[in-house]
Image (cartoon, rainbow, N blue to C red; front, side, top):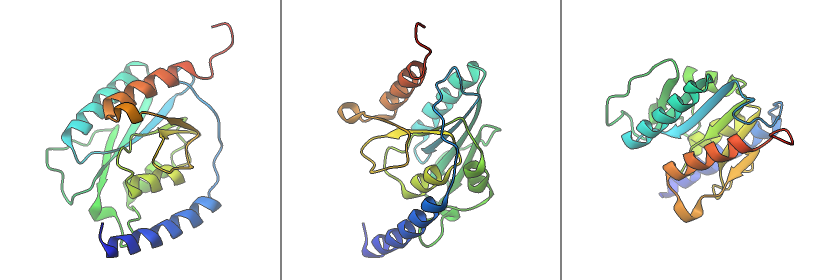
Length: 184
Protein backbone atom coordinates (compact mmCIF):
# COMPACT_ATOMS: atom_id res chain seq x y z
CA UNK A 1 0.00 0.00 0.00
CA UNK A 2 1.37 3.39 -0.90
CA UNK A 3 1.93 6.28 1.47
CA UNK A 4 -0.63 8.43 -0.40
CA UNK A 5 -3.24 5.67 -0.18
CA UNK A 6 -2.55 5.36 3.58
CA UNK A 7 -3.15 9.10 4.01
CA UNK A 8 -6.35 8.96 1.92
CA UNK A 9 -7.59 6.01 3.96
CA UNK A 10 -6.76 7.76 7.24
CA UNK A 11 -8.86 10.81 6.32
CA UNK A 12 -11.57 8.64 4.77
CA UNK A 13 -11.80 6.69 8.03
CA UNK A 14 -12.06 9.92 10.04
CA UNK A 15 -15.02 11.05 7.90
CA UNK A 16 -16.54 7.56 8.09
CA UNK A 17 -16.24 7.27 11.89
CA UNK A 18 -17.75 10.75 12.32
CA UNK A 19 -20.73 9.87 10.10
CA UNK A 20 -21.09 6.45 11.72
CA UNK A 21 -21.31 8.05 15.18
CA UNK A 22 -24.16 10.29 13.97
CA UNK A 23 -26.06 7.63 12.03
CA UNK A 24 -29.23 6.06 13.36
CA UNK A 25 -30.98 2.85 12.42
CA UNK A 26 -33.50 0.46 13.89
CA UNK A 27 -31.81 -2.78 14.90
CA UNK A 28 -33.76 -6.01 14.78
CA UNK A 29 -32.71 -9.63 14.37
CA UNK A 30 -34.13 -11.38 11.31
CA UNK A 31 -33.72 -14.86 9.94
CA UNK A 32 -34.44 -15.84 6.33
CA UNK A 33 -38.03 -16.84 7.16
CA UNK A 34 -38.82 -13.45 8.72
CA UNK A 35 -36.98 -11.21 6.26
CA UNK A 36 -38.78 -9.68 3.31
CA UNK A 37 -35.96 -7.53 1.92
CA UNK A 38 -32.29 -8.42 1.69
CA UNK A 39 -29.36 -6.32 0.53
CA UNK A 40 -26.02 -7.76 -0.55
CA UNK A 41 -22.75 -5.91 -1.05
CA UNK A 42 -19.73 -7.56 -2.61
CA UNK A 43 -16.59 -7.08 -4.67
CA UNK A 44 -17.66 -7.59 -8.30
CA UNK A 45 -14.22 -7.07 -9.81
CA UNK A 46 -13.80 -10.81 -10.28
CA UNK A 47 -16.43 -12.33 -12.59
CA UNK A 48 -16.43 -15.52 -10.50
CA UNK A 49 -17.62 -13.50 -7.46
CA UNK A 50 -20.38 -11.97 -9.55
CA UNK A 51 -21.53 -15.40 -10.73
CA UNK A 52 -21.61 -16.75 -7.15
CA UNK A 53 -23.57 -13.73 -5.93
CA UNK A 54 -25.94 -14.07 -8.89
CA UNK A 55 -26.68 -17.68 -7.87
CA UNK A 56 -27.17 -16.58 -4.23
CA UNK A 57 -29.58 -13.85 -5.32
CA UNK A 58 -31.55 -16.44 -7.28
CA UNK A 59 -31.63 -18.68 -4.19
CA UNK A 60 -33.13 -15.79 -2.19
CA UNK A 61 -35.59 -14.86 -4.95
CA UNK A 62 -36.76 -18.49 -5.05
CA UNK A 63 -37.66 -17.97 -1.38
CA UNK A 64 -39.80 -14.97 -2.42
CA UNK A 65 -37.39 -12.35 -1.02
CA UNK A 66 -36.91 -8.88 -2.43
CA UNK A 67 -33.19 -8.71 -3.11
CA UNK A 68 -30.88 -5.89 -4.18
CA UNK A 69 -27.16 -6.28 -4.62
CA UNK A 70 -24.47 -3.66 -5.01
CA UNK A 71 -21.19 -4.76 -6.56
CA UNK A 72 -17.97 -2.78 -6.36
CA UNK A 73 -15.45 -2.77 -9.20
CA UNK A 74 -12.01 -1.84 -7.87
CA UNK A 75 -11.08 -0.95 -11.46
CA UNK A 76 -12.45 1.82 -13.67
CA UNK A 77 -14.31 -0.63 -15.91
CA UNK A 78 -15.44 -4.22 -15.38
CA UNK A 79 -13.22 -6.83 -16.98
CA UNK A 80 -16.34 -8.64 -18.20
CA UNK A 81 -19.84 -7.82 -19.42
CA UNK A 82 -21.85 -6.77 -16.38
CA UNK A 83 -25.59 -6.70 -17.05
CA UNK A 84 -27.35 -4.44 -14.55
CA UNK A 85 -30.79 -5.77 -13.67
CA UNK A 86 -33.39 -4.78 -11.14
CA UNK A 87 -31.61 -6.61 -8.32
CA UNK A 88 -28.06 -5.86 -9.52
CA UNK A 89 -26.38 -2.48 -9.48
CA UNK A 90 -22.76 -1.48 -9.25
CA UNK A 91 -20.24 1.28 -8.72
CA UNK A 92 -16.53 1.53 -9.42
CA UNK A 93 -13.47 3.51 -8.43
CA UNK A 94 -14.88 6.24 -10.69
CA UNK A 95 -17.55 6.73 -7.98
CA UNK A 96 -15.05 6.91 -5.11
CA UNK A 97 -13.69 10.29 -4.04
CA UNK A 98 -10.13 11.27 -3.10
CA UNK A 99 -10.63 9.91 0.43
CA UNK A 100 -11.95 6.57 -0.92
CA UNK A 101 -15.54 7.42 0.08
CA UNK A 102 -18.09 5.99 -2.37
CA UNK A 103 -20.76 8.21 -3.86
CA UNK A 104 -23.33 8.35 -6.61
CA UNK A 105 -27.03 7.65 -6.89
CA UNK A 106 -26.69 3.83 -6.71
CA UNK A 107 -24.63 4.02 -3.51
CA UNK A 108 -26.93 6.58 -1.83
CA UNK A 109 -30.08 4.65 -2.71
CA UNK A 110 -28.58 1.41 -1.43
CA UNK A 111 -27.41 2.93 1.87
CA UNK A 112 -30.79 4.58 2.48
CA UNK A 113 -32.85 1.44 1.86
CA UNK A 114 -34.03 -0.16 5.11
CA UNK A 115 -33.30 -3.79 4.30
CA UNK A 116 -34.38 -6.36 6.88
CA UNK A 117 -30.97 -8.00 6.36
CA UNK A 118 -27.77 -6.63 4.82
CA UNK A 119 -25.20 -9.27 3.91
CA UNK A 120 -21.65 -7.96 3.45
CA UNK A 121 -19.65 -10.38 1.30
CA UNK A 122 -16.57 -8.14 1.51
CA UNK A 123 -13.74 -10.71 1.64
CA UNK A 124 -10.90 -8.20 1.10
CA UNK A 125 -11.69 -5.56 3.72
CA UNK A 126 -12.49 -3.02 1.01
CA UNK A 127 -13.02 0.42 2.55
CA UNK A 128 -15.73 1.59 0.10
CA UNK A 129 -17.80 -1.54 0.92
CA UNK A 130 -17.15 -1.14 4.66
CA UNK A 131 -18.32 2.48 4.41
CA UNK A 132 -21.58 1.47 2.70
CA UNK A 133 -22.27 -1.32 5.16
CA UNK A 134 -21.52 0.84 8.18
CA UNK A 135 -23.79 3.69 7.10
CA UNK A 136 -26.57 1.48 5.72
CA UNK A 137 -29.97 1.84 7.38
CA UNK A 138 -30.44 -1.97 7.28
CA UNK A 139 -31.96 -3.51 10.40
CA UNK A 140 -29.68 -6.55 10.69
CA UNK A 141 -26.12 -6.53 9.30
CA UNK A 142 -24.17 -9.73 8.68
CA UNK A 143 -20.50 -9.97 7.76
CA UNK A 144 -17.22 -11.79 8.15
CA UNK A 145 -15.07 -11.67 11.28
CA UNK A 146 -11.53 -10.47 10.99
CA UNK A 147 -12.24 -7.36 8.95
CA UNK A 148 -12.02 -5.25 12.08
CA UNK A 149 -15.64 -4.21 11.71
CA UNK A 150 -17.68 -3.22 14.70
CA UNK A 151 -20.68 -2.58 12.48
CA UNK A 152 -22.15 -6.05 12.21
CA UNK A 153 -25.00 -7.44 14.27
CA UNK A 154 -23.85 -10.96 13.42
CA UNK A 155 -20.32 -11.97 12.43
CA UNK A 156 -19.46 -15.22 10.70
CA UNK A 157 -16.09 -16.86 11.30
CA UNK A 158 -14.62 -18.60 8.23
CA UNK A 159 -10.85 -18.39 8.86
CA UNK A 160 -10.18 -22.09 8.18
CA UNK A 161 -11.72 -21.91 4.70
CA UNK A 162 -11.77 -18.25 3.67
CA UNK A 163 -13.67 -18.48 0.39
CA UNK A 164 -16.78 -16.78 -0.89
CA UNK A 165 -18.47 -20.18 -1.28
CA UNK A 166 -17.85 -21.02 2.37
CA UNK A 167 -19.08 -17.61 3.50
CA UNK A 168 -22.28 -18.01 1.45
CA UNK A 169 -22.81 -21.51 2.90
CA UNK A 170 -22.35 -20.19 6.45
CA UNK A 171 -24.69 -17.24 5.81
CA UNK A 172 -27.38 -19.67 4.60
CA UNK A 173 -26.81 -21.97 7.55
CA UNK A 174 -26.94 -19.34 10.29
CA UNK A 175 -29.66 -17.13 8.83
CA UNK A 176 -31.87 -20.21 8.52
CA UNK A 177 -31.09 -21.16 12.14
CA UNK A 178 -31.16 -17.99 14.25
CA UNK A 179 -34.15 -16.40 15.94
CA UNK A 180 -36.40 -19.43 15.48
CA UNK A 181 -39.32 -19.82 17.87
CA UNK A 182 -38.69 -22.36 20.63
CA UNK A 183 -40.00 -25.83 19.79
CA UNK A 184 -39.64 -25.48 16.01
